[in-house]
Amino acid sequence: MCILGRDKLIELIEKYKIVYPFDYRFLDGDSYILTVKEETTLQYLEHRNLISYEVVYTPPNYVAHLTAKSKYGRRGLSFLNAAKVHSGFIGRLALELVNLNNDRQPITIKRETPFMHIEFETREGKPAPYIGPYQFQYVTEDEKKMYLPILKKAFPNFEELAKTWFKNETP
Image (cartoon, rainbow, N blue to C red; front, side, top):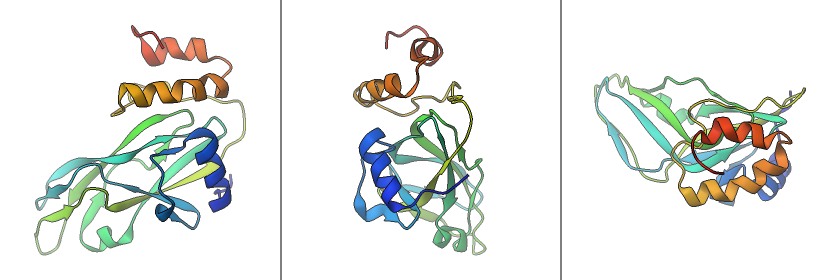
């Protein structure tokens, strides 16, 4: 596996919308920095899910990994969720957090604050897209429609996958 550099990230953003909306200010070396959808304050020992402002799409020959910005770890914010985003996943990410601040103080994360690095890595082998229950989590109908042509191109077995992804809906 190989972590993608800035030029490759820009190429994939333009081709596949791997991050939407995209802002050049949040390209950080070999990653993109996701921001927070809504301002959230976590009290001491409180667990909460923060939702990314951006929609993420991981194309078939890639996986993504999340790493926290260290400034939050230094303040006592602990990240609980697994840091992998499967190939084929589309949606906003739910970032599971708990406040373990030594001073027992609340921690506030403001809306659109740079919060979590996402790194995309190449993967080898036949595409095995994510088909779990969180596909398209926290996306609007318009955002879902925007990704359908991309999915149809990316996955030759789209019609079969659509039965799982959309259950009773018509893609």
